[in-house]
Length: 172
Image (cartoon, rainbow, N blue to C red; front, top):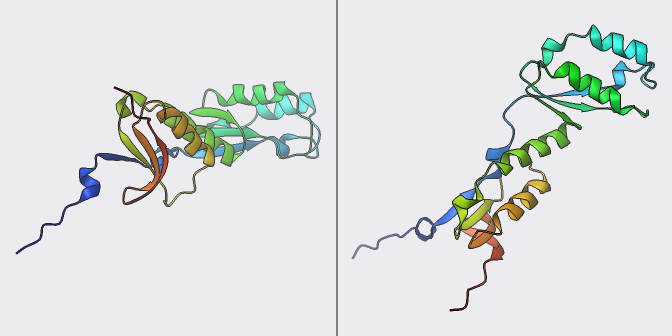
């Protein structure tokens, strides 16, 4: 008598979402204002404007640029705006923040593109382990996006999940 092996996970209808799929694919470059400051501490408007005007902005072509300042200096808001203005004709995307924050913003932006309607009354597992360390914000964001529509939301792998949410049964 031959025993048939049944893949219960495959038959369960569980949909796995791997948040690594939402990790940005484009190159991210950070534009730090610190080297553009006088003695890396003071923004001198005339010199700052002249330096930006003479900069080679083509190096940012088709890249995602995060604007930040690592100097312990007070930077006027218009300085960030001016840098963004110079980057605009070249960069694919311009955001404020260091690399870690820019990656988080891009992941959230990519998750936002999900059509939650595709997951109505579905059983969803948000994949746990992977090769990329993802920000906690991505897990919070996907939970908030899918919880209103899914039948259940779990974390982990289809064969070993941690329940996060289960839709209450509707009374007849």
